[in-house]
Image 1: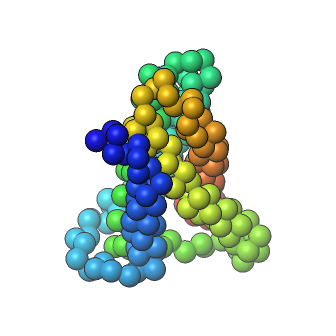
Image 2: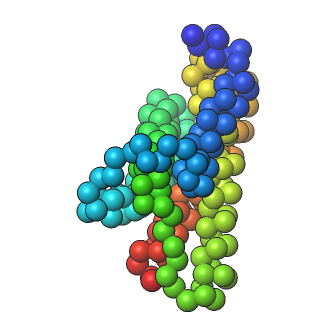
Length: 186
């Protein structure tokens, strides 16, 4: 299986990216069988943004920890932390997509000038980085899965991993800013 993955990293990256982005855009644009999802009780739906903010904060910690681990040469700790980050990302995305599919996107309740000059630019950059991060993260994970640790240095894993980690980190941080603007500031 690892050999097959190693031989097909670009194709698998593209496939996983297309499926992931189709799910995200389908939920946000309300395309697909939204009515097939059972609605959770209101307190559960109301808690999802707060849980996702905590998940994002945990993901920031695991990304930073993973970067520090690899810089110290602790490959096993790096692997565990980056897999934990991916798990946190999957949890975040699942909760986000469920809530958006059932409730719809949350509107901004603050003043128009804050919405125009702060909220939308932060949201736009957050979304752009999240979309760009998805294929990079899949690519790096597939390289790591398909190659023995000793060979990873000769692949694009280190270089693409640095870019993926940086973009992912900023995206998670901006996601927390968006959360704060939606649920705390206004």
